[in-house]
Length: 193
Image (cartoon, rainbow, N blue to C red; front, side, top):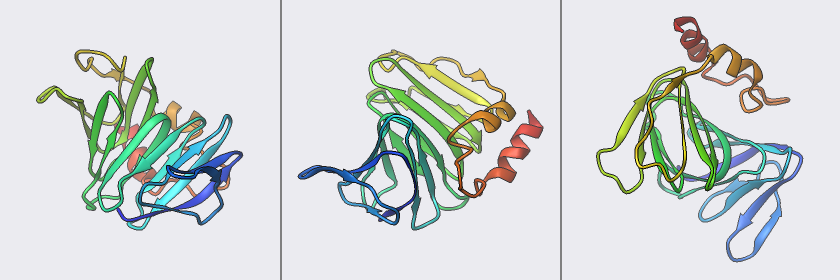
């Protein structure tokens, strides 16, 4: 991934430049190199990468990625990530766990020091605890892991109602945005459920 374009701004969204601090984001801003994107309270944003990987970030979120890699970082907050099938996937890092995905739509919420939630809408992901080789778990559609960031093991996933999540999630239902490109696959997962 080389860059992402800001395609949606709801309320207060800032581009974070490590050397200069924050500035208000504008539509079509390009996020790359060491830039990050941060949202305020009741704010959201959407980013589209050059390969059509779509990222939606929720309120009070700080998100960045390493240019030239498929490594995304969720410092805090919530995100939805949809990677088109056949593109090589992505890796999402938090301080507690790493999620590796390929051709998948997932949601993640991280509250430092409190909790971490990882949910698969379609496709699958491998969740691993940072610094613990071999402690990993594969999540499938309708499965969610909720854990403390300092947990010693990844807990068993719980079942969630995908239809309810799709109906009520502010990250799935973005005002003025097109329907998620992976919605037919999510609907198939709902049907399977």
